[in-house]
Length: 223
Image 1 (tube, helix red, strand yellow):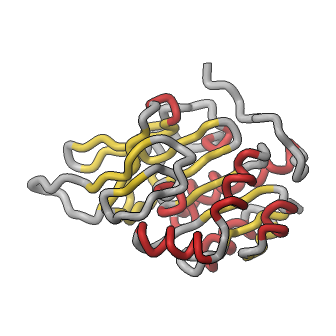
Image 2: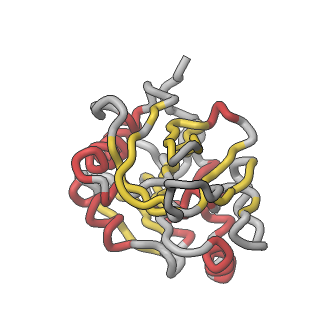
Image 3: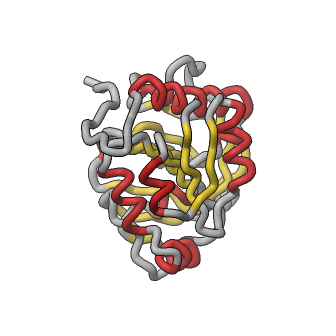
């Protein structure tokens, strides 16, 4: 079974994420150990809460470098919800710098008549990287579960893997670049579609047989 390090920085919804990964056939290991993260076949960075406390916890636990090293190593990496947002440079939610792995900002939804903030509940994805391994065997425009008031706005639009529309605002719902994937929604709360996404992630880990010294990007080309 694939061993997946689920990073513990005292902010993520670890139990739900681990249950979803177990259903997908993985062996999740909750950890804040750089050695465990380096040794794992893949890494999941979950997140629930606010941007600044999250970054403070990550830096207090000395997890910034291990996260960046895991991504640079080429092993599969999946960010979930706030675990997507902290990959970016800055957030309108706070003052702390993010990890700066993906260039761009985290922005708050604009208030407009007829929409609620936070964006909460089921909504449809528009898959903009349709051949991404994470999306295989999904229904067209699949419904997934969101809970967020902020969304990511990457400088490079090519990293967008899915979009979602809330009111009149069409925003990024997922990104993917080489071995790095991250989603704004919660796959562990997204019923069959969410389980399929997690199964796809676990299948990707198994099929590549990634070692801790892997260095070759391996996501399928979308061209």
